Length: 545
Image (cartoon, one colour):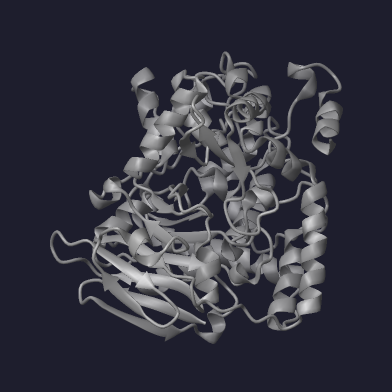
């Protein structure tokens, strides 16, 4: 397995062997170790000392379901700390089949130059920016940044082509598109035409584990909801919990939210001929939405919960078509929809800034889901729901540090292996056991679930170590005042988790062990609050049908 190192200044590329000690890590774990090894913590995020990295998990090309996420990383221009963001698409699987675990881009460009990198089985090269797909074929995977990244806007995203070739999959959080743009790097083109297959040490055992895990996902209530409704299923659930942002976080249950609920979006898809698909090859959940206009033409892809919440209800908008048009504009410019929606929300109240560590708070209000709030205010990623979303006992002020820590370890482990967070089962099945079984079958190892969890824990240690020496540690020691002082409707909650509990969350990292899997639906509904008793049973029956 190799690392492709790209020296932009000298226009030189070299393949390096992946060290033995790094052989079984990838994604966020690889990025965290490389940041501590090669990037000065005080480096300018948009300067030549920072790295722009692309990293995949150690199981990406095996065909195991849900393990084809791909990470980008570097020092964030928003949080001024370490940052990892990830996305779907076929790029991770292709890179693994080409024998490349990571791409590291270093240095700075010559003035006003834009570069593209071409990667195939036999060669890597710099190429001019032009009509790439026409030149290299329809099956290539492309990693790119838009005009926002070229101009080094701090909210710029990194885009990945989906399975249809549309650049709609975004690693958007933390402004890593600006880091990519600061290198003068417009795109990475990955050619699968001569890519081989990944060797599996014990193929029969591998197939057994995959079959069992697919069966688990297909019978899981959370994954079934995603399969039936896409991520917009969470709109009604979040509104029932009082966590769906409205009018710049003034309410947790917007008026007319039903217009953008999972049911409503599915009705539109049915009437207009829209469709759902997997964001990466081999996905069994298939929750990604291609949203059409009234004539059945694609308005945008990846029409997701966070998009609807931040570009919709947070701005007082509940017209699904208007939200889709805003989403397309974000994708076309190459900017983070969460940051954009939060920034536009400031026009509703410029004195109330829903951000932490320089990064917009996502679409889960921490006053009504306090464990996720602890994640926002302790994660080395800054305010980021993908770092550890938890709805366990959402309004209790006690034991939320434990809930957050459990979720942050789980998220870090998933990101290290390139696993989709939307595909974490809510029941008793353990991702740690699954990853151990797959790694053992693929590489002929004898890893335990605790060994897998330790990879996630070590990733967090590495991220925290970098941030302690960076400007990240000097920003925002407490949550915004309105989060602690203003009661949110309809729950009447404030974020009141004790400061000592928040400050001590990482003291439990080394000793944490998951003795028994916690049953947790990712965003559960509150049936009696909104729809009357029995809605959970009815929803379960509908999902089963």
